[in-house]
Structures are given as C-alpha cells and as structure tokens.
Image (cartoon, rainbow, N blue to C red):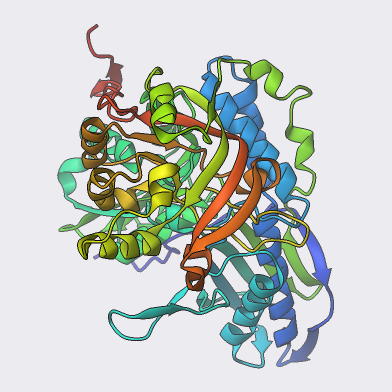
Length: 552
C-alpha cells in the first residue's frame, strides 16, 4: 500500500504577471489569533470587475500582439496570413481608443476567483462581481448577448449581459485572486469533448486523431487561435474546464512532467509537434497559409482507467482575459497593452500589395455574381456598396414567410446578405463594432432561400457545410468570407451608414441595411461547387514520431 501523498491537480508556479494598481480603497487588514487577515469590501470587488471587463474589451496582452507582429515578419507566412494579421493589429489599435470594443460579440462574462482562507468579505461576493459586470456592459459600447429562458421554448434578452458565470473557490493564503474572461459565442462553440479510450494514448494515433479534430475546428471562431488540448481528466467537466483555462494561458506554469501523485502537467514536446501540424494543414489565419494557431497548450491529466476524455478549446483573435488580485497592498489588474500601435509596421498595406478585386455591390445582383464568377476561391476582394444584415432570428422569420407561401423579401434578392449583429453605436459613429458572425448557423436556410431568389451572395466568417456548397452550385450563389475579429476596424473604416430595414423590435438581431466601403472579404465558396476549406488535403501521416508527407 503506498503512503499518503497529496498534490494539487493543477499545481501552478510563481505568478510573474505585470499588474497595475486600481485602488487601495475597500481593502484593510487586522490581526486575530496571531494571524493577519485581509478584509475586502464589496465595492472593491465591483470596481475590479468593472475595470477588468472594460480592459479585456479594448486591450490585449503584449504577448498576443507580438505574435500578430511575428506573422508580418515571417517570410513563410502567406499573403493572406499577413493581411489578416495586419487587419487584426489595426483593429487592436482602434479598440485601444476605448470607444469601440475589439469584437462585436462582447461575450459572456466569466469570473473565476480563488479566495484565501485569511480573506474575509461581507458575503455576497457573486453579487458584487455581477454588479461590476453590469456596470461595464451597461455603461460601455458593449453588446447584450445573454438570453433568459422564460419557458423551455421562449426566451428574452436580459438587456444587461447578466447573468455572468461566476465560480469561486477556497484556497490557502491571504489574497483573493481572479481570472476574468469574456467568451464570445464563436470561440465558446469550439469547445469539444471526446470520450476516447487508452487506444489514443500513443503518438501515432494521437496525432492522427488531433489532425482530424483540429481540421474540424474551422475558422468560425476567428483564428489565429490559442489552441488548448487536454488529455485525461477525473471527469468530463474537469477536462473541459481545464482546456478553457489552458487556452487563456492560465496554466502556463504547470510542471513539465508528471509524477506518481497524479498531478496535471504540460507536455511541451507534444505542444511543439501539434503546433507544427497546425502550420502544415494549410487553413492559415482564416483564408490559407501557415498561421491557423499562434500556439498550442497540451495538458495531461490523471484519469479513471475506464475513461479517457480529450477536450479541445480555443481562445480566438479577441483573446480577452486578464488576471486580477486583491492583497493587503490594494486591488490590482493585469497590465494589458494600451499602446498597440508599437506593433504595427512602419508601412501597412504597401507590403501586402497583392491583386485585390474590387466589387461594386450597387450593380444588379446578376452583374455582381458574373464578376465574382471570374475568380477562383481564396481571391481577396474589396466590397463597396449596399449590404443587408440578417442573422439567426431574422432568418427564422423569413423562413416562416416562405413556408406560408409569401415571397422572398426584395432586399435579399437585390443585395448580398451579411450575417452579423452590431454592438452599441457610440455617439458620433455610423456604427458600433460590427464584425461577422458564424456562417454555419444559417446553413439550413440557404437552399430554400436561394431557390426563392435570395441569399445568392452571402458574407460571414467560418466554413460552411456541403449543403451550402451544393446550393451555390445549383443556384449560382457565392459565400464570401469576411475576416473574423476586426469588428472595430470595420466600424471605423468600412461602414458608412446603418439603418433598420425590418424587425426593429429584435434589436441587434433586426434586419439592417448598411453601406460599406473597401470592406475586405475572400471568395470561399463559388458558383461552380468549389469550397476553399474542402480543397485542403491532409497534411501528412505519422509513423512513430516521424512525419511522412503524402506521395506527390
């Protein structure tokens, strides 16, 4: 029988995070029983949370920005890789102005806290933290995305982005430590759990398994990604939660090797091999190339002998998280980069002077489609003219009209449809942050809509299903991919006018008419049945640890 030995499941190393002081108010100490206790007032928690939600909506970590700049400086990066990276850096520079958030989907607010046993509060910590979320979302130009279920089938937007997901844990020490996250629907929807067996626990099988699953991630969550993979777990939910924390780099200081006590560790060698795999598969930073992922984290956890969960999660180009802490010295928040302009190159578009096809969207739809038909998938476009904006609820309502024998609205016959939903419009702006939403959610409507003469040119982010490719081939349609991520830049530089066309009562889910200028896009699916994403061949197979490229 082994002797008792204890280890944290996720033992973290020293915290080297740079912090900035928010306030010293609401924090005090007192002595009792020979120990010093930290007393934290609700206002300190509220203010820390409000500041955190502001910062992660507008600023990024310096390391993330440096990775974007690295793409521009890498001669092996594709032109599309560099174009996307430059657009994301421009977007970060605009967002850092504190008016337009970096992404229109300002996310579900997530707060994870670890309260030391020598930290005392008045109770109701979740309420104080929620108030901070409320203050940030109602006062800033952020979007409300949370739906309250009224019945099993009926729901209503809460109008405040509450409730937040708040998880608090007890731990040792005299500090209160936090991880703040804003998780948009695109990246949240790319969290996956696979219930595998020991058969996957060898390198050849694991690499084959991971290539299949990584390809299936697609681009709907706005790469380049921070990819996290967790192998094992004492439960399915713990594996998934660990993957989320790893994608936020929260677990970077885990040990690099395991032990008989069963704690989790990072497999640095496998991280490198998987990262190289993501560079070879050809998806790149959304439209072909090398930079599908900035980096990869692989965490190995203990497991029940009859279970082997494998969890995958991503943090997207809106890499929104920050650490916070309350100590005897005050209330602190991770110092994010407030001057991202330093990561921009001296020249911007000049070194990306590839052929860009300019499309006048104000021409008749037949002429727009005829022009698009001249070019292959992956062609870069610049769109100017009128777009109609419609997403999930609007599509459902239009389908009800078609099912009832009514005709396709003329606006979907005459103009391309952009799947999107805006954030709040700041005073003096034509639009709030207004980036694309995930195209795949509208796939089931495409055949019926195109057969009725609408949605013949679609604009959104991410890959589509085969039914969309087939519909475009039958009806002469196109799917154009917009860059996922630079919602602030699109609002400032590309969107000139926004007005409601129909269903104003749906708020950001209404049908909008917008005027755009030099709006960037790529041909992803054409009228001949070609799909950029399905044209990517498997990268290679693995024999042992040696990669072998396919013949030819």
